[in-house]
Length: 311
Image 1 (cartoon, rainbow, N blue to C red):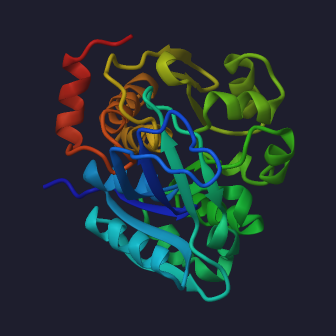
Image 2: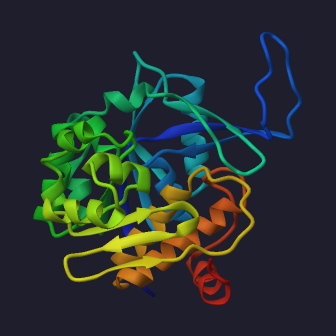
């Protein structure tokens, strides 16, 4: 029997609170009825972790939470999705990171976000031997980790472990400068389109991806909503279309793409095949509410990818 891919997800873990459907905000102290309020684990590390687990990977989360009810709920939801939470550290002077997401009728969702404990994870909280023993290490939000992110990626590179990075920060050049030491150590960089253009101060995804490749990144995979994904290496570039689906909620689509793409790459799929798996995984999540939406595994996502129309 083939052993599951061992992935360590380090960094940003968030509890999302979803409110649907919200097309207007009540004025002053008035109220309004909605259809659904629910919670889910999320974040550039946490959201990717639960989707990887659903796809059959053996996933360990490394994160910081507060000593509060939000943290307890976040950990329990991660466990319910099969993620190993034993390496999550509790901090006693900050709250657990959380977001409130009012989802409108088109599936879009603005957000109110509290950074919370995500800003307090340090290298002392991360077991580098765990990093070295993985098949793949995914760092979500390296801009919060500073030099610790470089140390994690160096440990992984030294042990022959592949790596990926996804940022939470908005697209501004200062944030790319903040993680400059990470870039030559990153095998897969996974931004969204707005982030990439802002981070690299370019006007096309092609130029933005090339700017990252020039800084030493191995592969770049950029999510672009309904357009799909643009992928690039020094030898190959191309667009991979999104699938034609009825969108319910776009929360977690980027994290789910990351999960499918990095798992595909870890399992030896080529650039286009890995991105196709990423798009197909994102399609599962977009058809429900929240990052943990849907019941699927790697086989069912592959079947969806081969039988479903693209845009």
